[in-house]
Image (tube, rainbow, N blue to C red; front, side, top):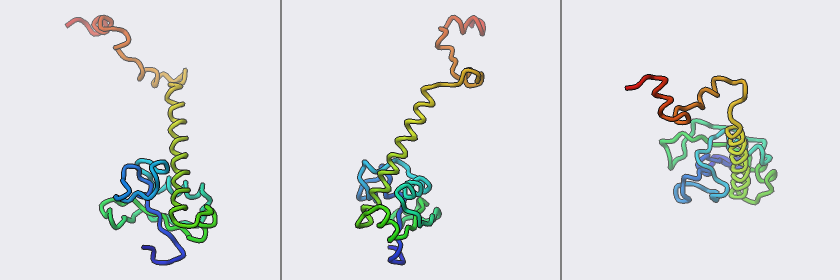
Length: 147
């Protein structure tokens, strides 16, 4: 429980898709991701319009003392005003939806880079893609000698 009424605590476990609701996830699966980091949650909160926050990376949730997941301490007035939510649950859902969209965009960008392949002039990356399976077994025996 927060020590002061003018701030709310947001734990990274609230957005972890691997956890069930009874284990501590507080947003729907559509607004959750696997293994959220404190930096990603802070970025999503800033994207939601929340400006007054503090990061506490060394903190552990009381129900998960073995995992140092970290928490955000957010100004309640700022969070409710910027997200236009009426409660903490609304704030968490708006942060979670932005977090999910951020991860989806990052995956799409990564997929485009890997689909493109190595650049034409990068010999080291091109060499990493070559394999003996493409040439067939006889080419390998000729290169290394028969056994």
